[in-house]
Length: 422
Image (tube, rainbow, N blue to C red; front, side, top):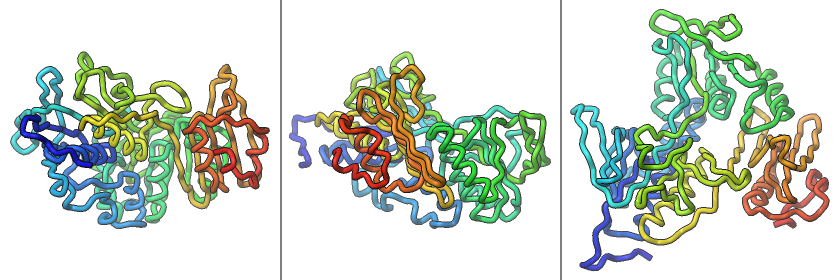
């Protein structure tokens, strides 16, 4: 039910930094409770909210850009939001409750006052250290504008180099291969998806990639680039080089919190929040890739930069901002990815520490793999390669911390009905 303001009640001023999953769910939660407060949404992208996970599909040509938006063009008007688009926040003043924006056109800085603030600024691409980064045709893949820039130069590209073997790197490689580009992937670790899977699953993934014609260099980093105006040659840490017409930097992300005053607001890797998604400063909240809270499986403070958690955190933050108590129980890192004809699902703690007293159960067949990690009879991690249909139930076991009291080897059977454990 929407709460109507009485004459004596203050009209609240809400500011939301970011219009991704956390930002839009935060705005909707606020407006669902507070019909009259003003909402200002600030984004460095001048577009309506869109699905960031789908930009790789646009790169591959599987979807058009008009399929990316997750809200319609009337989103801001319908929710009575004042959009400030194409502008990046330069500073926050928690004491005076001001957000400062540097305007690109006027080259001036202006401030906007707030009563409640949600920092949902997302994440920025993790930078690399290499010479020649100022050459043309070197891209990050974080926004739809990055993909548009790549598509503009693709007609002149034959060979592409992808830096990073994580999820973004895979999506970039798949998109480019789908466009007929020869792709080489440079991976620092010994196998791909090293943050999501173990070495057994990683080797299966690597074999699938190689069989599909993707060239992979593992255990190697980039040293530098050369070219005239555009990149032509990449120099590697093993003193070799490879020719390329395009480079995609996909080395992960870092919380976009450079504008956050660390002497005022507690920041670790991300902005530290409590169960209400409130920061160390009352009235200032954080959600999504910029926020850090308890990881359900690890039981430590963590940043899980994935879309569903950003949406859930944004909803929790917006609800609390508008004055209705709502507790967020914690996040869980999980991913589902299709690599050519291979389906991968992971969740929780996949690589436990040797002294963690965990029980590990594994079953491997030719093209299938399953790994379950338990601690104190509670499932805390899983990896599945192919036949992942019941993986959602396993994720539910992790999220709900349900003790497993039966013989755990039974869970490895493809015929076991996991639903009986819920």
